[in-house]
Structure formats: structure tokens, C-alpha cells
Length: 210
Image (cartoon, rainbow, N blue to C red; front, side, top):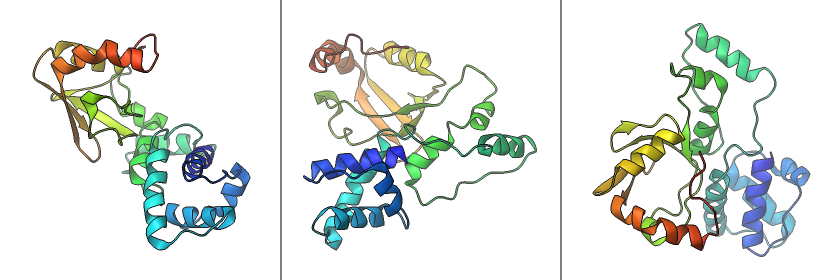
């Protein structure tokens, strides 16, 4: 609920509307994100027209994907129940009216999903947000994407990702993702050249903390 309320609040502020509380948001949920937007607009001022509601819904989904884990947790016992089913050989599927990309990212973080990986050091690595810079034009809208491989090599944790990036001094870095757009392609040499510029632009002491 917290993730939904925060994403909705950011979108409402962007459109000059006063965000509603988490409790109010709870009362508006049902029948998908577009209905949530339409109801939020009705209680906060002028109702949204059909085309407007569609566009605002897209903006909401992008905001929601930026932090798919933040305030979302499984109900007590769900994770353990899924683990037992998996251990017994059941094939599990996902049925949801949430945004598919964000929902898959959440399920990947359940403990039974981590147990599917034989190496305990293997983790799920995902792109939470793209910091806008000249080297990533065209990719700045993406977030909440699970990273599978870099230049054809599987990525099992952040340290492996850092090593693969450091090894690529020339040519291209191809980041292979679980969902659309499927791949992000960046110039390896340009990444090395622009790191200090990006660090200063965003005022961070280190570009990575593993």
C-alpha cells in the first residue's frame, strides 16, 4: 500500500494536485491503476478525461516501478507456503492485476525464489532507476527491471556486475533484462570517461557501494 500511495502522490504533485493520504488511497483501490487514477482525480478536483487518464496512468506506472519493493510485503505465511509448494515440485505461476513488470520484480525477491539458485551468493540484481546523463539518452524512463546478463555473462550479484563493467574498456556493454525493452546498450569507453562527471553532477561520494 505504501508504494502505491507514494507513487500516486508523486504523480498528483506533478499535476499540481494535493496528494491524498494512504488511508484515502486504500479506499480508491480496485479494478486496476487506471481506475485508481480516475478516482483520485475525482476526489482531488476536476475529473480526468479518458485520454488524460490513460496518459496519467502511464506516468503512475513509471513512478510505481521506481521502487517496487519499498512498502510491499507478502501476507504472513505466504512466503513460507510458496516455499513448501516449490520444494514439493509444484509449478507456480503469477496472476495479478498489478503492473506485470513490477509484480515480477517483487516475486523474484521472495525467499523461495532465492532458494531456486544453487549458489547462495547469487542474488537478484535489478535496475531501480536511471540517473539521467548524456550517455544513457533513450533509457532514462526505465526502472524496476531485473538484470540477467551483461555481454552474455550471467549476473549473480552486484560485485559480478561491477567486475563485468570494469572489464569492458571498449566496445559496447549490453545489459540483458528480463522484461521489455530486453536490452540496454551503452558505450563502454564513454562510461569510463563520464563517471566522474556524473558523480559530481549528482553530488555523490561514490558511484558504487557494494
